[in-house]
Image 1: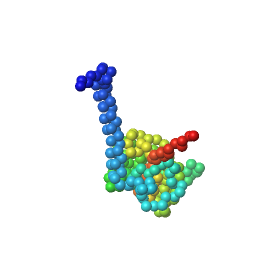
Image 2: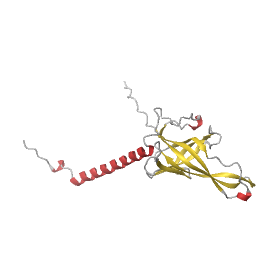
Image 3: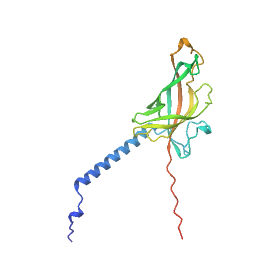
Image 4: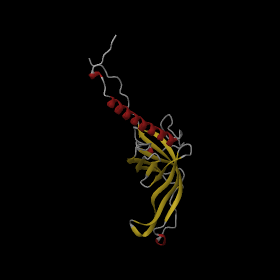
Length: 219
């Protein structure tokens, strides 16, 4: 039997190569994102079966992210909270330690350095991605000498890595970081202090949409 092909049956070889090249690039980008996330989490500090933080602390109700989000990963922060001695906005003769910014390293569940936390507040991974947040809610820490726990909402993103899809961030399990109780007056105006702190940051992203059930037959 002889099988013949017309010209219309043939696909231009250049098009095939272009499609293959695009597919390879798409695969590489996707694979890179998966690898970046795996390295960031260190295969630890992941979600529990219920999609809740694994920090072991009970989360106050006002710090629970909205429905439609799930926990993606957690990171441990170790660094400082920076305060400056400034006059009060409503009383120029009174001075108070005013929060300026955090500076901290971020570690995955295996203790590997995977990113940093700084003014914004911003969380940035070494994969080039970052998320900036704004405080929605706060709650006192169970540790009376520690900075509050927070719920933040993402306001900006950078890059295409692990932080690029984050919608909400919790600051939990805080240790230290509070402003000094004294030492801020006119003589020390402009001075800065760096108070050591640690915390767990839990990062959330959108959950998968519910799969619609089978359509009901119409008579």
